[in-house]
Figure (tube, one colour):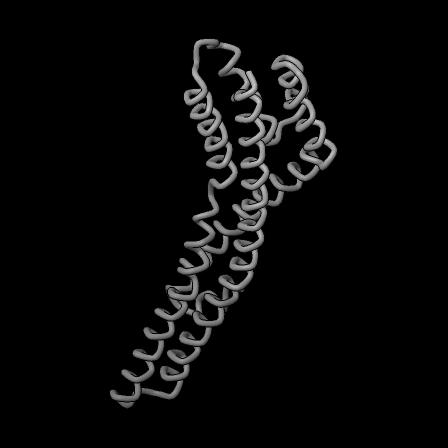
Length: 203
């Protein structure tokens, strides 16, 4: 591994750093969504929907306290707003629900944009390494240097291109999968928002 890093030149190291960053974020997201999938089952969603439509705030909050997923957290925050301040009008309650939902969305989307940067930056750094390697090769040809210098420049160009793509392609797949998971969770939170607003309109 170290041999390839040295042969690829200086641009191999920032690509390697991007790979480490992307791996750390990917592992954190995998852990997070594996937890969410266990904590936010279809049964939980159906029961929460039923409670929001038919039970008082305390009963809904007590149910949600047993869960740590974004739907439960947003529900607790939203219902606490109405419990703690009975003078809030419908528009203020709606705004507070939106704030609670947005807080949860910001929480689970954290770090996703970094994966997007890694996807874009890794092949670009690889391309930059390719250009530098080819410049080195052509410079060696122009100065009639040995074949080994030319070969080093070409190998540097190929190594950085390959490594950049090797990092970017799996990170792109991970980025897309996480994006789909985020979208699914956002849809669930949007449905929750409508349920809570409908509940407050009845009051």
